[in-house]
Image (cartoon, rainbow, N blue to C red):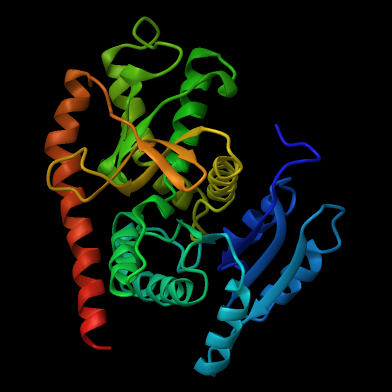
Length: 337
């Protein structure tokens, strides 16, 4: 629990004027672990977001940094200023998903955005914790890793794909089904952060669901969790994607990272470098966070027959393709420099 002696950190939100960035910044502005909150975006609206948040009676100092789409040099200057001294960078920047779009449809645009932001992080604050929200996470995290490797400063313990929303959704959906408080439910979610690569381990849920849900209910719930992002996109009817719930999950994960940096041992599921799944350089699983980022990548334990089938037939094949796509993009990008 935070106290007057809680260690505080400089945090940057990159893409702070967007649908996820604004509520994420609001939540982080209320965090007892944040001393400085730097908000960056390529649109001038971010200065207004910073001004708005700076009027709230919370502790962090909030500063806005607006790039200019017509001036690359000024944009780079502002981005570097936003990253100076930063210890935790959270990246929700990018194009949101619209009806009919998959996360892969976002790849061409968001891959380039993440590349630019991670390059700047490597140049300005190479030891900061990097939390990537920008979709498709299954590919953008491998892109970030390749860029950091090329810069000679890659530390797999400090790079995270924020897959927390899959856990948040799983906990909420299970709690609603069994009539429990979501705070008392924990469903580990492994694999990736897109469609069939999302694998909620309902067999390992707390409390146990073995007597609560039938096989048919487990299957239906698994599919709902996998398609929950699309559920929101369609419900918003072209007005956006899962912004509020993603902001909640992003703030939760960033807070867990800061708790770990403060000496607490916190377990969260995250998409990170891993050797859990054969052929997958990155994989989401429970990790233990500590002073220097990832202290331990946890095992996934024994899966149910249904979960094992999904892992082998859907999760791993799709994840391999997404990882390779990201790695190849980054290598092609580096070859042009």
